[in-house]
Length: 243
Ligand SMILES: Nc1ncnc2c1ncn2[C@@H]1O[C@H](COP(=O)(O)OP(=O)(O)OP(=O)(O)O)[C@@H](O)[C@H]1O
Ligand SMILES: [Mg+2]
View 1: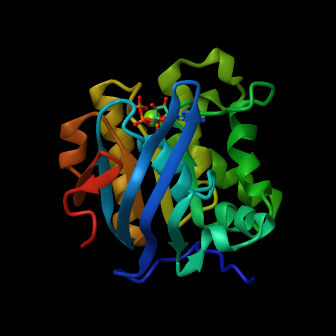
View 2: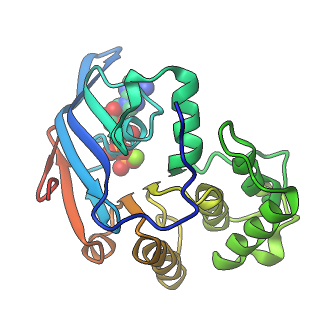
């Protein structure tokens, strides 16, 4: 499968993400727990979309499934028309490396690497051939500067606060210039001013490059600044999830 790199603008309105009728049930000690039950959404280039919902509603589960990280039992996910779970694991890894920037709720930085290396690691993913190490390094430093951490490049994650780690995770997610950014509470640990700066940056990427941002947030004010918003409730997305 040929995957194009997207260090260029997306055509506005391009259908980036299409999730149909997703179903996910976990087997727990207390029995079966259905978290997703018919969740669907569409996301187009240039859009910013917020998912809200109670703790435990299944927002992270949904985001992982949309990002090719967790298999749904029912439904389909397409990214730029490509069936994510119809692909082989290797193809899915490449799709993730080139098309998706994922910001985990719990960051998942590598503790033995410094901040710059944590961002650069994205450029070493399969399917993502950077022109040269210097170009990649320059981009990583530019992104660290954009999230306000240029002077922390040689620190390790343990030397950073939660909010600083969150911003490193964000820089890493943007490293390969993915057309689809999935962010789980990207401002959850940030003060209002820093959170707003991070959001402004993410929104400018979506607006200027025609990329799409799907974010999970508990903050209704943040959700209100997105172009669309839906609530995850009883396993479904309620609201204008499909334009
Ligand atoms: N691997 C798993 N095995 C069993 N149950 C799980 C698993 N992962 C998540 N769950 C359960 O599924 C439900 C949804 O979890 P999820 O993390 O998606 O919620 P969330 O909406 O992201 O919550 P929060 O806002 O607190 O981050 C929870 O009740 C959780 O306990
Ligand atoms: Mg969560």
